[in-house]
Length: 535
Image 1: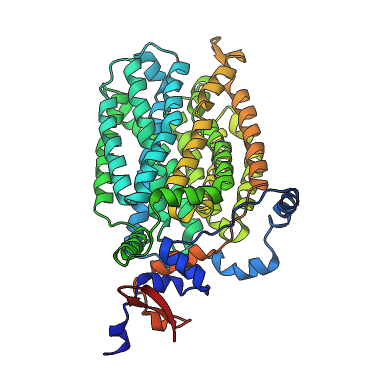
Image 2: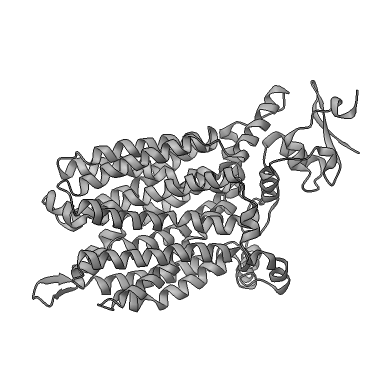
């Protein structure tokens, strides 16, 4: 009987061989599936001083780092590493996140008509936006738990199907109270999409392409906004049912996206983790429960989680503060027609789409923090042309401001994923993102309320509010906040051990253990479990 018959070559052995480790580390890999990537934080004055100083010294990449990452300047080699099935997975995640944005902006773009139909003010309707943002964190926890325990596919399919049902229901609401009730349920459902979508797109993505794919995924948000703007003009402004028809149309597309994701498999990383757990159970190896893993991760990552929530609070204010009331600014303050407003918003989101991909990719070699900080500075320079140019030239300001806003957002998926515990990426990324949304949930209401303190008169003599001044001050403060939070935040290592494992999992044809560099494999004993043998 030959060597290959005597030993069962396990996938975990393939993964472990990508880096040298001592016996204890390898046992941890077998028992837990994935190894903790950071040390438990020790808070004292000496560590604080070191951390503070290195926030500046580590901000700019060294010459050696630039030379080592020069090959990443061209995104094509990294993108070629992505197989056809993985592209379909990325596309499904992109479409899911796009339709999240489509539904969200279907309310803000129709705020005036909704206020008229329900006999309420625009300020009252913005509470529908606020309710959605407030309850997103509930969905992030619920569907993040499902995604990490039962699979990204299960979580996203259930999530999208529920959104489909609620979009149908939205078209039949009779009054303002029913509208708020449905939007509250929407908040929970929409809150679950981001974490599962990010995990679906990035779980099996090669490390060389993660920055680009992160930017592409995040711009599903901008793409969804463009779709909402276009279909509002095509449907809501031309049919008797107005905004109701917009939601019915959305339900049909959402159902197709659900079927698309249902037709695709689970991510390889999640399946490999489940294989490890199954192997451990079958061979009597201690397997920590989901709760035990969560407690262990929380002890190590609690400070990182606090930072992630603070970080995402600033980003949510930046995104919603620059977009939610912008159509109102154009139509009320500058009296743009519906067509002119549509053009400006589409131009802005084209800038967002381009910025997200370019900045997301550039963060691979200049660093996540530096990419975000550059966007905050560039965005601050664009505030005046974005808010105070009252003619068609405002399109340029809108393009470049959203280029920088969503350019910074393009770094978010991969940055959060790198900071999250390996075993809990879906739930932690989802919770951090949605708790940030919770913190910024009142951004539209804040802007409309402050705007009422700045009454002005339109050229036609009608009393209106100076939303331009309010939004400019608001977004300027947010840019400053995000810059400072990012400056003093952590800089994930460009390639950690977990990324080596993930990259190994991405290989379609994993070589046998004896072909791996270290020539090590595991002998499987039914009683003893796997043990390492060096050749």
